[in-house]
Structures are given as C-alpha cells and as structure tokens.
Image 1 (cartoon, helix red, strand yellow):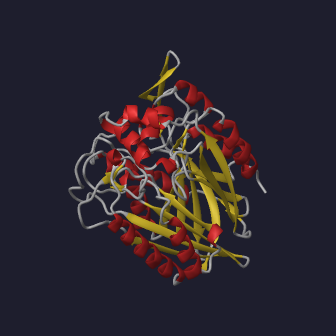
Image 2 (cartoon, one colour; image 1 turned 135 degrees about the horizontal axis):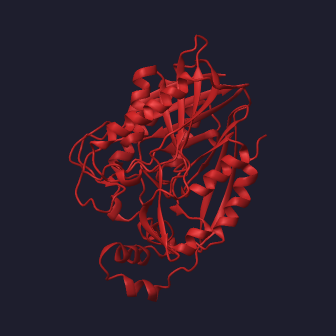
Image 3 (cartoon, one colour; image 1 turned 90 degrees about the vertical axis):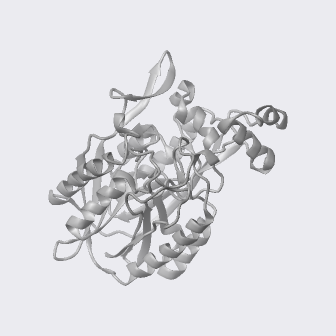
Length: 414
C-alpha cells in the first residue's frame, strides 16, 4: 500500500452565516480556530481510493458531482471510490442550498473557496505518495451521551446518561516503514456542538485532530459516526472555552491508541460498492395545507413558503445513499448521506464485528434518519428537524426496516 496526504486551510476571511444553530441570527464575528480540509489518497494492488474529511456541518449535494469528477480526473481515482465526509462541526459555513435559513444561509463564495482548496489538497497529496502499512486500534472516550429522554412515550431533548450510546474510538494508522505515522483516521460518534457562539471553529473534532497532528506529524482525519441522537452531554452549547478542553481530551485518547499495540491489516483491493434506499414520508403536504402555514412565524412558515415556491421539491420519499469503501483487508467504511441515529451505527459495527465503520454526514445530506422507535416517540430527530432540513414530511417508521435490509448485507465481512 501507498498513501499520500494533505491538509489545507478552508477558513473564509470574511463574515458569513454559520450553520447548525437556529439561535444564531448574525454573521460570524471572528475565527476561534481555523477550519481544515484533510485528504488521503490510498493505493494498493493497482487500485486507488480517496477520502476527504472537512470541518463542515455537511457536504451540500449541489456541487459534489462536479468535485467528485474533478478529483477522479486529477488523482486517477475511480469516481465511485471517492468518499466525502464532514466532521459535522456546527461552527462552520453552510454548504447546502436547500436548507432552512434559520440554520445558516449559503454563501456561494465559500463553495468557490472550498472547491479550489479541495483540488489543491488533492494535487499536494499525490506529491507525497509513499509506502505504508495499515493497522487498527481501539479505545473509549466518555464525552458522548444520548440526548433523548423519553417520558410517557414522548421524547424530549434532554441529556440521558442512561440512554444507549457508543463511546468506542477506532483509529486506523497508516505507518511508514520506519514506524512513523503518515496518516491517521479517527472514528467516533458525538455531535460537535460545544459552542453556539458567532466564531468559526472546527469544534472539538478539529481541535483534537490538530493536536494529534502536532504530536505525530501525521495528517489526521476525523470520521464522524452515527451521532444523530448523541451529544456531548450537558456540555452542549456551553461555549468556546470548552472546545480546547474536549479537543485535548479526545486527542489524548487517540494518541494513547496510536501508542498501543494495533491489529495489523493486510493490503486488499480498494473498491467501492454503492446502494440506495428510498425513505417514504408519512404524508406530504397539499398546496392548501402549505397555504395554511405560510404566514406563520419561524421555521414553519419558512418551510411552507419554500415548498410553495418550489413545488417540484415535494416528493413521496427521500433517497439515502450508501457507499461501502474497502480500504484494507478486514477494514471498510460504510458512508451514508444522513444524520444517522446511533442504533444504525451500532448494528453495522456488530454485524461486521468491528471491521466496518459507519460514517454519517457523507456524500451529501438528506436529514435526520430516526429509528422506528424514535418515529413513534417523536422529538427533534423525528419531527422538528424535518422543517430545518426542508423535508416535505416526517419519515414513515418503515424506513428502519428498509435501511437495515440494505446496511446489514453491506456490513458483512468479506
């Protein structure tokens, strides 16, 4: 195997809307921490793959096809073997054009910057290709906590220390022949929502990766797991000061894992498998129903006005896209373009015996993907979030069975 890596700064130097919190009503007011895009090109047995991780809420789908093809052409990588992942930082710019304004309007200038830096990173990574071996290590980190408290069958947005959660940290290390780390991929599942202030930041995920890079010299990508219903407990939205504390704590876990014994993974063809799942809505609005809502304040009125202006966006279902990317023997990533709730990720890891890592916030964005139980319980993930993502309706509970019918076979070890 050979690997090439790059890290580029993607911080805009002008004020712009930040994505992720409806409580923000003004433009950004400074830079608490630079935003980065990190990229690794892998090559093994005559095949190539490319993984991108960026300090973004998600990857808006509008420009992804063009960027994917540009990367494929520049790096001689099959387009289907390119994975775009976002850390899900809530303190970066919006990248999605179809999204409620309450969670940050899109600034097209940022997309221009992002595309330019993406191609710059790809060219830089190719210049650094060198032999590596890959290994896997695991640990635990206690920041993640379930954020749904169910009372009388209804879900409330409250930290739930007793709720289900996955606190496992997995680190994939790509080492040079001398043992030094060329690249590290860290997988964990927790919303980066420590700060709701008006400062640009890669959040605790970006802070942690920068610390790992400072200690090891390795380009360190963060791969966000299925954290749709997982928050940093009672630390959510407590402020900028918590970011370096929690970044340092996660970095310590990652560095400890890198220092421990790893399971060596052999080379294997780098290949991708794609599938899709249609996720039906319970009900889609009629024009008369939208007109009843369009004068209302807040996100409900905005939602109705958006669909009245764009009735072609009203569909019976949304499409969840699945990408399995095999990157070594007994090691794959399963990327999904949604805010997947934790139980989907846990099942993927259980079925694969830990050899497939579930990666949300990848290759675009559909919205929150609740389980059947969560659809029954309601709450933000199943109900309110659909307005912010400008979905025409709430998902039907049958999406659960449909998703698992596809993700389970894609999770089985080869």
